Length: 182
Picture 1: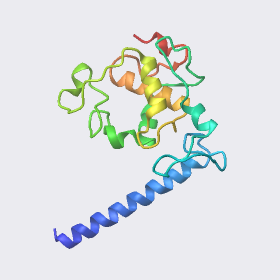
Picture 2 (picture 1 turned 90 degrees about the vertical axis):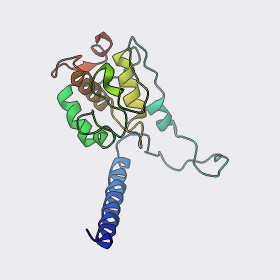
Picture 3 (picture 1 turned 180 degrees about the horizontal axis):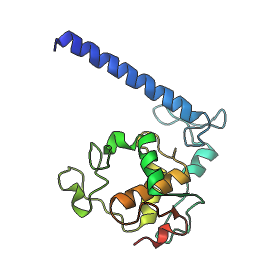
Picture 4 (picture 1 turned 135 degrees about the vertical axis):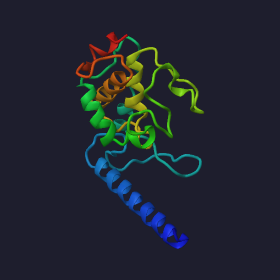
């Protein structure tokens, strides 16, 4: 392929991707209830670089939960693996983890104990299913943490548990069932 055509293609693809990301971010910021929503003007000290702002009460409340093994802090909501597969695609999890959770560039999510053997990431295990929910809800998506609803986090957790052979596809995960997963 002609180098100029290739460069043109790459630039156009980049611009389209950037425009789509900006559009999706704007859509999410209009009512998702996630971390990116501001409750109005926020005043206060800026960081040492002069950038940023203090988080709003709503932003803190979204992330200010700590779920332990017993699941006592899990919020209301539910989801199953089928809903999780849809959320995996719609919330762009597949962008980093691949279409089935086995590809990269981010850590492999499906494949059992040896799933990380061919990755430069260290092996990460989750001793309790509630901790998977907690991490997904707080830290994902990587570029927009805290934007998932409780239902989406339950569904994505169910999807990962199903894909790893731990639960059945139609098992519903919620605050009562998730802590019971072995």
